[in-house]
Length: 306
Image (cartoon, rainbow, N blue to C red; front, side, top):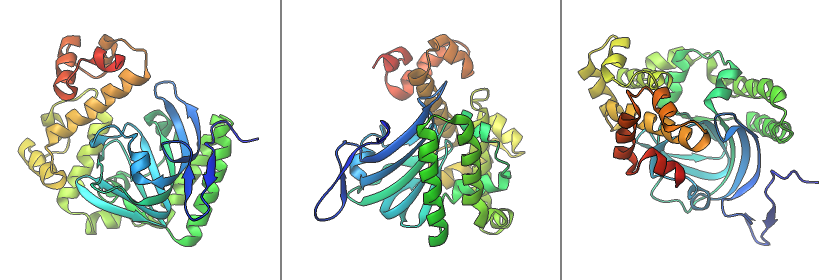
């Protein structure tokens, strides 16, 4: 009997698989998180991009999770860090909380897509030993090619992750997904430092390091001066570099990540507004409320209630 987490599908007589549900999910398995809706979630989407993209709220955003997307067929259109990508069969991308995502103008394309989504807490438990050079490189080069042979093995990984996660076997899922990451990165792992020095511009490297630091420290540090000091660069230089690379200011990046973190806490925890304000490093609840309303047009309480 099918797992309850698997969405039923029906076949059209002529061509593509059309899903009964609105979102286009063919199947989904997940393990609920303590501080997030899903600690880890694996799924397959067979649909037009317009159909499943309607579930993504804003036109541009920072995702609260780490998300690997692998295209089996068709194409996925996406804007990452102010750059447009068209990801086709045997290609994948990594979306992390530091990346600015924007909806494409056209979404009439059909795509068969495998997705693995993980919370920050789950990523920390994986204890992946990738160097900073690798994470900075992926930040500015988030799309990569997958050989046909390796693609088949990755599909097998997804089938196994689907079964393990559907059974809510968290202890088994951690080493399995850790192995998946290393297998996915293996073709490029030895080249990351070389690629960082030869293929990444100085601006891209600084921006990658900056966004990595923002994701790790934004709850305690809101000032651009602090990040510039950690990078041993002037505040003006960091501001100009990030603006040239992403098209938005460095201060806006910090605020965007803070807002996304606040929205995640408001929607997925029972913490009070004061507790969330304290966790995010605001002087008091009033300052947090003013900051949140300036970005979202409503108070934190109204956002949670809505």
